[in-house]
Image 1 (cartoon, helix red, strand yellow):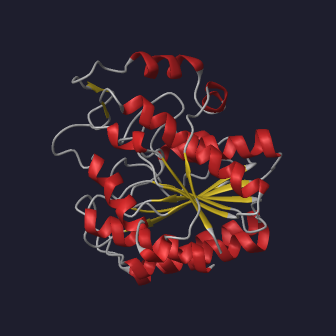
Image 2 (spheres, one colour):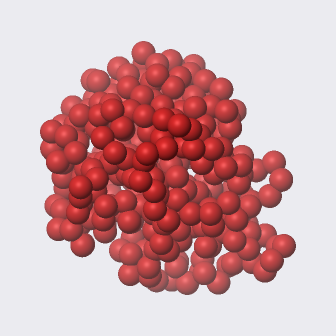
Image 3 (cartoon, one colour):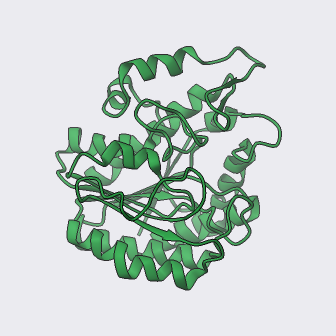
Length: 309
């Protein structure tokens, strides 16, 4: 199956500063991985900026205005919190990152392409409606989900999040709305400290925790026993993947021990589920992954699995 790759060079202009793990080289590494011969025939598109209307489906006007006003001058940086740093090019990158997710929804909902991958940064799953945090400015996956409902008339949209950190932002955006679902596996204890199994929203939030040192067998077990059955029961009309690769054994920010084979497996499982319920519609948005070599090889495994599903 063909996979649409959406990205934009503006994503490299988001520069939180020296030694920050969410660095511009993450984008360069992902793009190099997708330039391999195996992916040369895939269609590609430049991400447009998310519009005010699209962002306001998730974030209130006051938050959007505060973010736009926070943009620093050339050469300066502004800290939104201890981890989320804006440079001069960050707002443009964040708008393209959210816009890629929106365009991916349009692509898979109008066809003929049914799978899309957004090779963008900054990530989004920690951004709450009124709060930037955890390297995230806009809630990209949630913005995409709301766009699918508002523009394409879908009634049930699910996000599957296998980033090693809990997607507290996506949960905050969805937890009061039964038309949305979040299924998340993540290490606990770990930043941001949320994501217990008892956090259920209105019965639409499913959190599965992994202890430090958990391996691929433990990861596959929580998806097989809890998260995939929950998604199956929800029967989403669109499946959005928050594709974080920081659960890789080489990643410096956590202690889960996954490999590329585990990311390929969960991608295949999610794609099969989308074929069953969502006419195959899958939008994948890049989240974490902070060892550059592991990030590149994991993205390649993920996109390859999307192609084969």
